Length: 333
Image (cartoon, rainbow, N blue to C red; front, side, top):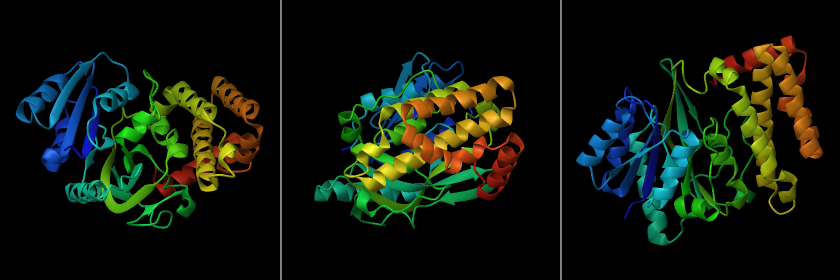
């Protein structure tokens, strides 16, 4: 029995992927590790093959043409046999003690036949020698199975990310989750799309996922994000198109609130990066993005304009100054 499938999308990851893999191996025979070599041009594929040869009952090496992060996640899900599915980026890692607690929790679910759709854990920013733990203790009930009815308000700096969610594998397959390929920032879709379908969840207050921030070529680096702003906009529009959060207002209000919250964050990120770049072309893209939201969902547009993302539409100097201050306070990417 494999309780968790860890999918590790890898692209030119030879210098750091082994640390990631070694932490996952602490799960022993209870875990499945799928190393997806996404057309790497270095020794990533060789390293994956070596681990498969050494741990044939745990590690599976997959080699494919380059398709981007989403392609790696899709391939991992396609091949996953574990009860739960967790994506771990190759430059990140997991805490070994927390992994034991996660496995104990999933084994308990299995024994008691109470498998939840989503297990939530804490994640830790590992940035320039500093650590910042993102917890959900004031938002989610601890150590109990709960539904959206018991979910509280998420803080602006503590919303759900790919790092904090572990989905039931069959649940993801049943809802037909498939991420766009050859684009960045698909992790937002990985978290966002399943939310309205979730029937129950569980929060385990352990600092499980270690999210490394510091490489200049990382997709979350500010200058890299500006360079790839068209991909950020594409993902934001895709999420807007998925469903109207207000359709769930009567039947699942807390879920609807969080969907709105997430779109507000996505609009904020896209809009402020377009402001920071300070080019006429990107100012036009910012206006076009807001026009897109207005035409697709006027009610959601009005909500966002009066919320966090609306502040990014203030005069550029004011908006960017506010963003810089918020970045220092909350210490996000």
